[in-house]
Length: 471
Image (cartoon, rainbow, N blue to C red):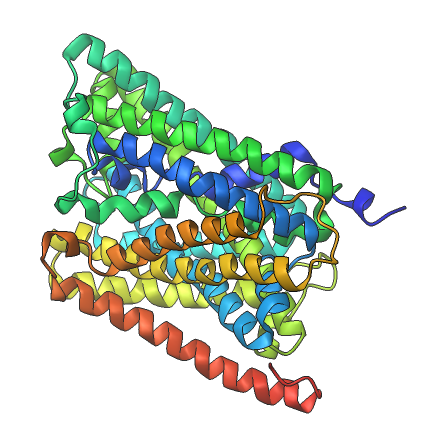
């Protein structure tokens, strides 16, 4: 029996995996904070970024199937040195992003069920969720895939409810924001600080390439799943954003509790309203867990492959002998996430809960910058591999000659680069720099890069012993 035929994931599972990875409920309110112009930004990003990014992901994923994903592509293009950097950022961002997701989970949980829940009980919820996520990912691929598929379905339901509910609310009560052509024209005001969330929300289609041996027919199913999930995800994001803006004035959209506030506005506080808020809100909370399971599964698997070649410490290479899951990378993810959550709790204790949204955004922006860095290597790698590894069969090729490939890579780099810039300097186009916000984000970014360079030095020593020094 061939390796492909032993895989567990077919087209439907891969599509749901991509939807679960890319479609995130927790940042939907942040993108809605752009106001009606968010709809135009979504469409611009779809045409100029998502489509070319998806095409590049399909070409690389089918030409170089395996479990390394971006790590493998960058390694083939530029050698082990850049591969180490890539896989470090790709993996560790999950441990840094997980706190932001579960901080929002705890805030929403308290808003729905226990409004008087204190800070440290919420921190405890975040830590417990972190280790539930790690347990699921350590258990088996089958368990993870079940959570991923259920999470994708839950995300679709939540966004459908937001979209439909927004239109129904607007029909009864009027539209909360102006949807004129003028209001929808992209602007460069202070709300532009939320623009990188749109790029962030649409990254992750390449993650399925890390599932390697788990895919039944990679050459057939990877292209179809990326096309299907890209269309589905973008349409749902736009629909959900419109629903929120139909009901909630932009200035009332909160980052942590904004989703629950929207549901309360849509359905009211009666018996039916409370039922809908609790039901849809609980589904949204489940999607937070499924999203972390998805990314932990993919990123840890890529880190394990890198560690098994000596490019990351040996602890990261540990693999479960029964299930083949990357238990070393998963457990480190849990430890780092727990540490960040606890530090967040002490910071909020010192600064006061009034800064909750601001501190949440700082944690999210810092982790998002790390998340974006590997994509700055991915698109140049596409060009390099096209030029210097043309002999490798490509079941799917991005249309056009090399001139078109350079153009596509440049546009994608522009989108990713501006997202990193705006995460660090959210009001730079308004001529304002909030150093109290920017300095912690920049310190976290450079500290993470510095740790990566330290790990790179260790990797070079390990590979030198093996006679395969980093290029």
